[in-house]
Length: 394
Image (cartoon, rainbow, N blue to C red):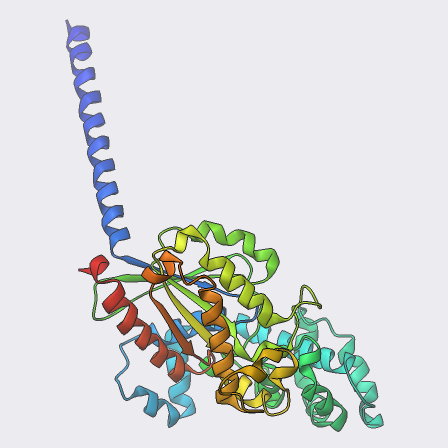
C-alpha cells in the first residue's frame, strides 16, 4: 500500500518541479529582455592609435563617483595635488594604478630606445655609455623598470640633447608613442619608487589594445545603461570586431587627425589617414550599421595644431591645395580639409538610402583632455540620445 502512494506522489513532484523551472526560465527571459531594452550599445572603431582606449578611460573618469557639478571643469584646474589624488582613488584601485605605473615605465623605456635607434645626429659623448645601457633594457621587465629612478638624470640629459630633440622633430618618419614628450619631460616625478599615476597620467599611457574591452555607465537624466565597447584597431585585431556588431545604436569612429604624415606600424607603405578613410568607408557599408547613428571623432586635434606648422599636409594629400579654404600651415584649413575628406568618403554615392536615414555627426576632439571629452560627449548625448534614439528610450 505504501509503495502505491509513493508511486502516485512522484509524478506530482516532477510536475511541480517542471512548472517551477519553466516559470523561472520565463522570468529570467523577461528580466534579460528588460535589461537589454535599458541598454544603449556604443561601439568604438578606428585604426590603431586613434585614441579609442583613451576615450574609454575618460568615460570612466567622467562617470565614476558622485555626479560632478557643472563648474567642476573650472575647479579641476585649481585642484591641489591632494584633491587630485583623492579623485583618482575614487576611480582606480591601487592595483590598477600599480599596473599603470608599470605601463608608464615601459612607455619611457620604449620611447628612449626608439629615439636612440632613430637618432639623426651624434649624441653628446658624455652620454653614450648610459645611452648604451638604456638601449639594452627590456621595457616589460620589472628589474629594468626599477632602474629608471637611478638613471633619471641621464634620461633627462639624453632627452634634452640636441641630437635627440632633432630626432623628435622628425618623429612622423618612424613609430613613436604620442606620450613620449609628456613622460620624458616629467621623468623625475614618474620614476619615483612610490609614484602612482593620477588621471592626467593615466590617459597618456600607450598600450596596444588586444581583444574586446567593455565599459558600462549610466546617464543621470535617463534610466539607461550605456555599454561602450573598445576593440583593438590594429589590422590583426579587426577580425574580432564582427562579434560586437549586432544591436549597435551608436557607432563612434575615431581617426587621429594628426597622423596624415605617418605610416602604419603593420605596413610601412600605407599612410595612416588613408587607411583610416578606407576603413571608415568599409565600416559604413556593413549592413549591421544601416540604422546606427554615426559620430566621427577627428581626434588628436592638439597634435594636429602643432604638426601643421612644420609638416605640410599637401605633401601627403595634394588635393589639399585645391581645397576652397586652403591655407598653408593653418590648423583650421587642415582640419576642415580632413573633415571634408571623411564626409565625402561617407557618401561616395549620394543615392545611398542608408546614409539618408542614418544620423551623422562630426566632432574635433582631444582624447587626453577630460574637459574636451566631457563637453563633446555631452553634445553626443544631447543630439544622438535625446533626438535619434527617442523611440528606443521612451
